[in-house]
Length: 283
Image 1 (cartoon, rainbow, N blue to C red):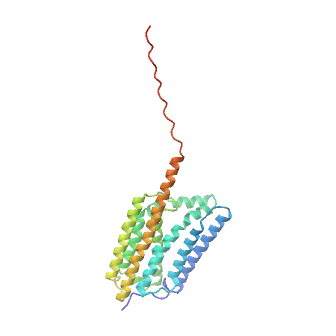
Image 2: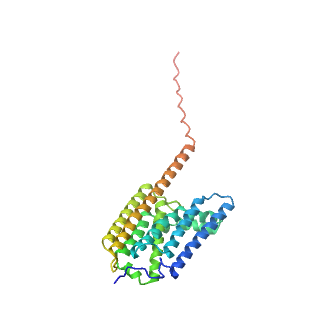
Image 3: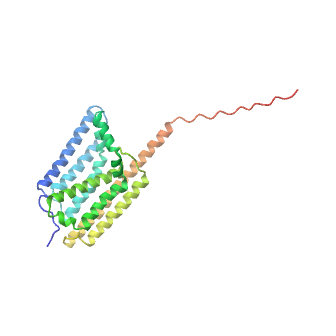
């Protein structure tokens, strides 16, 4: 019996749940564009490429939700995983939606509350790169190395919940690694790069495990199994390389701004030279 398939109505099919996911992505892009337009109308600068980044990420979610993707069942699923859990989160993070929300919101209780939430201790712990990576990669290992993957194929709502978790965990992990929006604590390059390397290695090992054996309780054609695992492996490397580039570029810009601030600081005044008082000479 082949359990490795996607039922109509799940994410990745044109059923009602897929349509709801697509509409949510379109709504999010619309709200983002309206907020950016409002910001520009009052004379503030907001780069257009951020609009394009957010809309591209939303388009990827729409494609994963309703568009027919090529390949067998597992290959299609891995393409959805790559789009929803890795590529779209990076595009959303590059668009800096939290910064946009803070700049659009008028000074007052709402803005202070949003900033307080972003810099709260619980959010700070969730945005700690190792914790965020553990939530992201741990969920994937649970999905593909237990009976969960086979179970969700028979429950459309559970399937949709899993995809929502994949998107949320991918967003959190990418947000924590890139740290482009205001956060409670900005972690150094060493912590973020070490976390990214460890997460990338865990993702690669998981892809190799899928290549060797399908998720428990599922059966896939060997060609589909191997192609799906390769999509996960090489596609993951591609997105992780892009994240590493963003992390390095943000660190380089931050270091440059710190050097400029130091140069603008006035040099400390030299210490006064002590005057030597000669002893009076005798007659």
